Length: 83
Image (cartoon, rainbow, N blue to C red; front, side):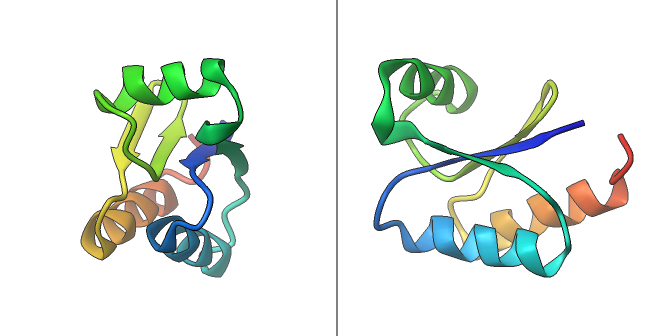
């Protein structure tokens, strides 16, 4: 299943999450929440606000607002890599 990450420009947390995903060898699609109302609405629906980054795979999603949350999200994705 595809991994999507909702990001915003100039976001150090977003860069950190991408580094973790890249290091884990996980492929993902970046969605810039600042580039369209549809992506911003989806981010708000998932996270309850406009906070980025957020990781999505299917019906699961993880906030990645802190290094601990980002690491937990990547670990969960790695555990279920084939899901």
